[in-house]
Every structure is written in C-alpha cells, then in structure tokens.
Length: 373
Image (cartoon, rainbow, N blue to C red; front, side):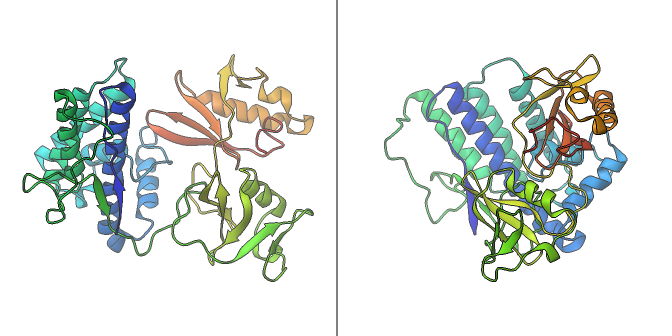
C-alpha cells in the first residue's frame, strides 16, 4: 500500500502556511478519489469518472466543464452538495453534518484563493479542523494528518516547535493516531487500484513502464528499437502529426509503447503519457501539455499577449477563414478574468472558476506560427 505524506508547517509565515494548507487539501483529494474509485468502479466501470463528468456536462454545461480531476475537492464536494443525482452519495453518507462540513471546506478554499488577505497558522488550524471532523465522520484517514497539523500549529504558537530538531514519531500500534495520546500520522494510506484507467494525455504515467522501446528517426519515422520495424502500420491518422504531438514536449531519450498503444516518455524527469498509436480516447478535453504562451481577446480579436499579434494576421492566406472562425469562437465564450491557453495537441482551452472547456482544436497551420512546436 502506498501513501501520501502531508507536509506540515514549520513557521507562521505565508509560504509555510500555504504549504500546509495545499498539502493537506491534496491528501484529502487523493484519498477521496482513491475511495471513490474503489467503491464505484466495481458497479459503474473503471471509466466511471469520465462518464459521470460527461453526463453532468450535458446536464449543466455552464457549471460542469468536461476537464475535471477526481481528486479536486472543489469538484466532488460541490457535486455531493448540489447535483440532483450524484454517484458521490454512494461514497460518503448524505448526512447533515457532512453536508455542513463540505460547505465549510469549499468556502474556506474559496476564501484562501480569492480573498485578499494573508492567512495565518490560526486560519490553517481552522481549515484543518474542518478536514479532521470530515475525516472522522466519513471514516477517512485524512483525520490523522489533520489532527497532527493542528498539534503542530499549537506548538508553533507556543514556541515549542523548533525546526530541525527530532520530532515525535507516530506509534506503530495506533495507525490512526487518534485513539490515544500519541502523535497522529502525517501519511494518508492509499489502497492500490487493480484496474486503473489511463489518465488524460500529458498526465503522469500510471503503472509499470513497458519494456518495448521505440525511437523517432531522422526521416520522421517511428521504429521499434528491438526489431527495427516501423510503427506506421500500428498508427492511425497522420504519423507526422502523431510524432509532433509526442515529441513537442521534448521527452528525453527513447519512448515506450504499451500493449494498448499508449505512448510514454520522460518529460522534465517524470514518466508521462504522451499519446496513443491509435485514436485518442473520446471525451478528453485537454490533451497533452500546456504551451508556454498566453492569449487574450482585444477588440474582438484573439491575440498573443507577448507579440500583440492577432491570430488572423499571422496564419497563411489559405487558413485565414479558419483563423477568423477560431477567433469568433473564443471571443464568444471568454469573460473578464478568464484564461485562454492551448496545448501542444492544439486544444484551445478556456479556464475559469467553473473549470476547463475546450473551445476549438487547431493545427500548426491554423494557429500562431511556432507556438505548437
């Protein structure tokens, strides 16, 4: 069994407080997602989350975007509270106290992210209390690290915590750390998932790295290193575009291919899912990696904020009409404060407080020259 270790603050400073808060919320989200998959996958299938999000997007496209994370508390708690019918009420009891705590956790998150104030360890303590109480009532292990964080904050306030000194360790006989007076654990155990669906393209690779290695040749082919055979017969669509999608994130070294056609590689030192030899899975909103470019709508035109150039003025003459359609599509949905990004796959995205939606799919010919790699 693996686990997630929550990082505790060492000082009453902005950076330490934010580290503690986001680390605890991350652990809470991971545990909830882990529990949800364990409960729902046997009856709803391993792709239950993607199917649920697609169904909810059809019901409420304004508030439920297609790109969601199963470990995002702002998503699953809102669904638990507000969706007329939701699978999340199969995961935790739909009781009054859990509903109240869910609302407090959401409101606390929004306050931390959007209210112009500098949180203190006392505000972190309050947030940890809500997560401790939620974990206790829902029988979740996050109650242990939340309790430990409360104790750490009390020691910081009293001057008892001295960073760098040996800290108390969790007693082996009490894994929850809540039954007696021992130190609660900082780790949240996560049950292994036997059959786990592939994550979105661009995500961390799940499971073992396969042994089959492939490489891109100078002639822009992809060959099996062991046999020298080309993968052209295994790929669907334009092989040149596939290669661009797999390599524009600049993976280091050779790539690998799994039995289901999933292609992976090392990006910035991490094992990542780069794409597929066959068709990409249906329903993916944001495939690949965000391009390090930023865009805005100015006078109804889609512009690159670094150069100030409008999309329609930068593409070739043969793509001008498509560029105008893309500009119109983006201008129609963007609101003040929203964010426009694009992935190396050409997915043009709009991000706001409600989530992420895909506005259009572009190619190197219909987008700003050089931006897609």
